[in-house]
Image 1 (tube, rainbow, N blue to C red):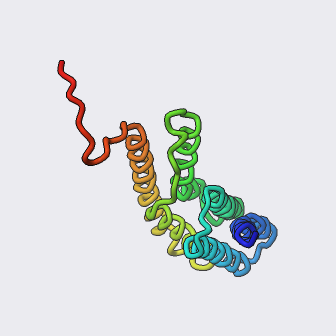
Image 2 (cartoon, helix red, strand yellow):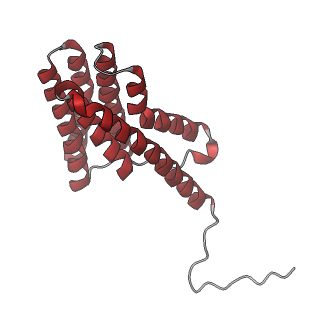
Amino acid sequence: MQRRASLVLLNALSLSRLPLAAVFIAVSDSHMRAFLVVLAAATDFLDGWIARHRGLATRWGALIDPVADRGFMVTAFIVCLLDGLIGPVELTLLLLRDIGTAIGFIVARLRPDMRAVELKARMLGKLVTTLQLAVLLCVLLYPPLVRPLVALVSLLSLASVVDYTRAVWSQRQRQQRPPSPPLGAPMSTVRK
């Protein structure tokens, strides 16, 4: 029962980024929005840290966490676009990785031979998320750094999509290989 309660609280912590996104829409003060970005980043770090260190990582949690991240991030960037703080090209570059992984997720779920592939976060993707948060903070508090950071995010996003795609295909290939005979098992002697 305690594990179940811990999982519920952990998932609630992840999902708290969705109400934070709603508050981001409702407030217009850039310092308050920056505080919301920091708070969203803190919940993301905290739920991941707790899940890993307490052995509470689950497939459901691994799905909720990125959905909550993307919900907050995409909402915040669209609000910044609508407020004229970033342009459409910058928005597209910032969301390049998200668009690529969303397409990959849909393809992986539609293809029967890929449904068993476990989709896991990758280090490069985590770096892109961290830089996206930095871009949001700069959009709100220090605009001169936005363009160089957007360029860096877009390059790392492309690399992240390639890295993620390679990891998924590699896992798919491993799952399709026939199992190796156990060590010491007699080899079959079939002649042609």
